[in-house]
Image 1: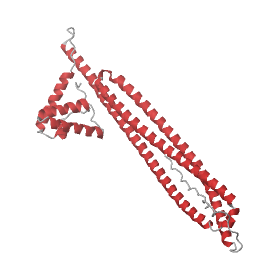
Image 2 (image 1 turned 60 degrees about the vertical axis):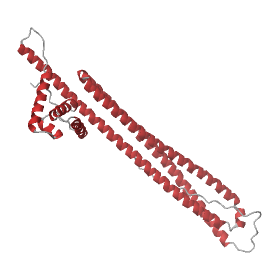
Image 3 (image 1 turned 180 degrees about the vertical axis):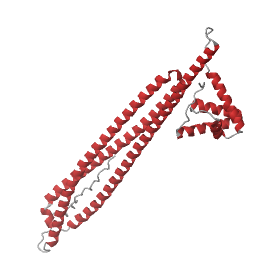
Image 4 (image 1 turned 90 degrees about the vertical axis):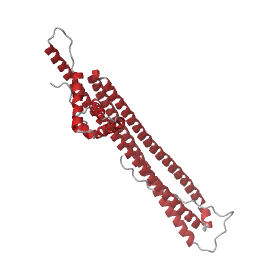
Length: 345
């Protein structure tokens, strides 16, 4: 029966990088080779749960000879066995039985410590997985916001082009003053409808901007929760190492907390997907309104074109001069740009 536990090597690449960085700091602070290898052995066993071997220690430090490394590692194990060998001060027990009982207690403690290292490494893996999932969710939200902003800019450019075309049509209609007096009522009605559509477009833009801001805030909250979860996990790891006597109970509590965090994250993700679905539904409703407005705008454009043709075909003679000042320019209808469907999150 072994007196000292034999923990498994660290499998995480992040933990290996952390161990290498810690060894580099020890190399810079400790010029003496034997003391350096002694500190590296203690670091590998106590902090990272790795069983120190001469080859493993030399690959990390790469200083001195293999004979020196072997002597230091053997001395470390001998010292560790001596420290971990429990002795029962019972005068009524034979020395052989006292020694066997001490070895049994040390073996049980070593197995418990090895299980603790494994559970702590599993907890580190869960925290890393949660961090990666949060980063992917934030990247998706930012990409969706960028696509939405690009679509909005495209719609604004189309609106400006339509307004320029409307101005041209208004200038062409300025020559038909006589016929325009008869159509002033229709023009006023069309202007009122145009103002209502402009107001609806402004409202739609405001709603869209609010949805984008909500998505950004949700992404920021997810990132903050991820950072808080990472800090809590690091505190849990330190507390687990400091309280080895209560290790099994604390590990069970850490597992329950991890499950609760996972459930809470799934619930929050489902809430975000529901909100995105509602936003898509609302965008579909707005798209329907925009399509209807486009149909009305196209009909009005055709009506204006018919009026222009009638004015062009009217005889030049016999037209009565307009009363008062020149007729007001008729702002043409602004066809609403078609809103593309938002891709699913």
